[in-house]
Image 1 (cartoon, one colour):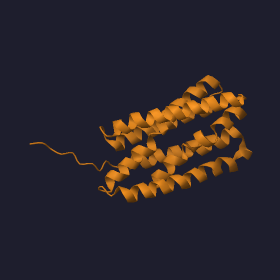
Image 2 (cartoon, rainbow, N blue to C red):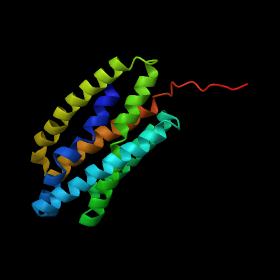
Image 3 (cartoon, rainbow, N blue to C red):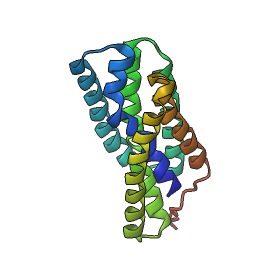
Image 4 (cartoon, one colour):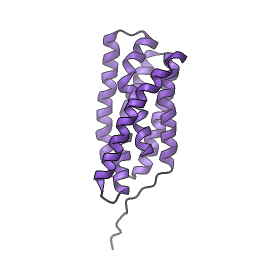
Length: 179
């Protein structure tokens, strides 16, 4: 459940603050900010489909670690670059990879519950809702440190914690051995 919380919290900035970040840090127009944020959301939809299908074929715990590490790296690039083009590309890539973290984690939790998906889905959805609220409040509270610092903290710290949590998850699926 802690992982569900972290997985959602790390990606909330894409929905809640990305247009504001582009406008404040890169001085883009409102239309440019909205279009670039929309591209991130579209990339996220594609990422969910691609990695959702892949998670049925490979070990979910390893896929989760891969996704987490890639997202942390992309967040680092996004928040460190002064170049708008690189920031947009890294945000789109982060949207592609980070959107798949929660569904892969949810499938892994469902596998762990031996088929009792109702409880797992209910708890992870509840934690997702709580994380959405806190994910908006934390960077908002830190804006006195500057826009770039507040949003970097609000995205990278949970992503790092999520990566550490993913390292301790194990794959519960049992492979059937054919005679």
